[in-house]
Image (cartoon, rainbow, N blue to C red; front, side):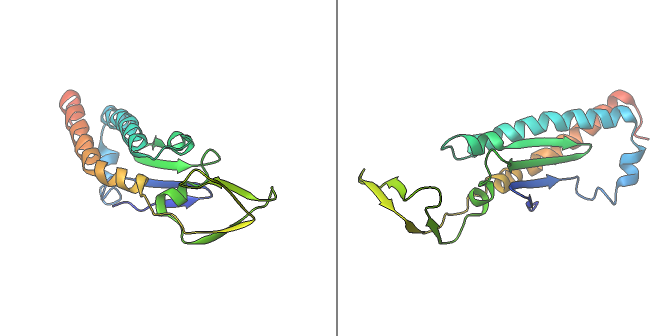
Length: 165
């Protein structure tokens, strides 16, 4: 399964064709028409994966879900979440351990407990959050589909356009 990378508050998973480096000659020998078909198919797949991932994302304010993007750069598909819209994406993905939360911009923290009672404190011990692996799970679920779709796109394009190189 592809592993996530982190850049600031953005969490991403990149997927390139397995063995792409070893098969670079094959891809470089493909006619541009075939490569265009593959790139076009990748764009369609990216939209499908983004939609699927958003459908599995937790929604509180909607910011995390809205930050999910699936983009294509040449033959690389990247699924990411985070940025200024949801800087806590990494915590949703990988969870957090117990930690202290202190009031910084107010005199006290405020929340409503399970019984509906207003609670206030200057400092609390947060128990941590469980990892949800939304991005990683989406890529794990869709990886086989991506490879199969790419094989089909290459086959269709080479049948329409003739030779592979």
